[in-house]
Length: 466
Ligand SMILES: [Zn+2]
Image 1: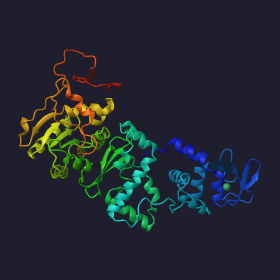
Image 2: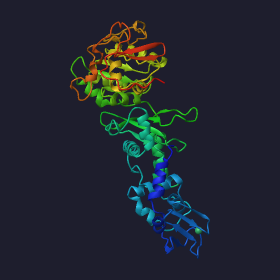
Image 3: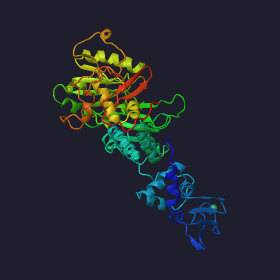
Image 4: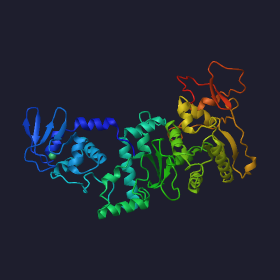
């Protein structure tokens, strides 16, 4: 479960008045010097043992020998968990509807079973709506989650640089809070909604949230319904064996960024290209760099009949396989290329430096958009339009000093039919045989071979490879 950021806790401790919370719980306070006193609601108190110290924003009961700040008060007064108390106070801070519910709870209870936070889903929604509402809730949570926003930034998907990214793909974060907002499982409606969420795959048999602690990326079908969801754990320091990549249970459905595939199919003949990644994060990387004609398999074994059908239905001519440049990625790309060629498509392999995936490559190169444009322009041709035996497809490593650039392959940005972006011209100066190091040359050593890249107008900064 994502940790609650210290800054959030600090804000709650400073900005929510303990005095007001105590009064809202029905305790009459009397001023005595700098402090306020009142009868403690947690024990039979005839002597006004409860003391509030406003300038420190603390409370203390001399009878119970307990005290603390606003969060501790809510835990005690409402009988909720720490996390639940934080959620309640955050809502209060945001000025939302739960404020009166805090005040209304004048009589303290040992353990609250009535959840005061609004449920993230309508309890009577059908399965489609339930899935949509949950992912919508995740989407809202991500916008307020410093941890999730920071994660996107570390993956080179910085929301500050790509302000439409989060809304376009309705990215979300699963942070365990839906459970706090559903009716308790010991109540009839609480049990019923949990059972239904479990059936959809959002809650596991253990009761845990399926995508807990993950960035959540929905995949929509042509009608705009959620067909699939992908989760990527925000943290890498997980218990051994914890999967970092998750999907909804059952077979994969839907085509990621179908809008981009449709738009690619509407381009001029000869330009109907789609970039096919092996992971959704890689596809988002291309998208952020301006390549909207991108989609993704669900892992290297996850190219589905539905994706192929979408390529065919929308007139895609050429597929640029941008799977990871590792052994598994290479093998999967070869196999997939044979299948796609057999289906009448032209196939090219996007060749990243050895061992890299699209996301890592984009993060290590700067500017990422131009670096991605370069590998697209230098994609290796694997075959086209007619059935080809697998043996004929060669898997030679390609280095950038001998790019097999395809001049006609344009990297497209923006609306369908728009002029190619300036980045698409990058590889027009085919360096051919380089005489030696040139003044404008970039060298990028990666394992066995070295990339020598020329013709960048400006290289402000190149982060070294790790
Ligand atoms: Zn007390």
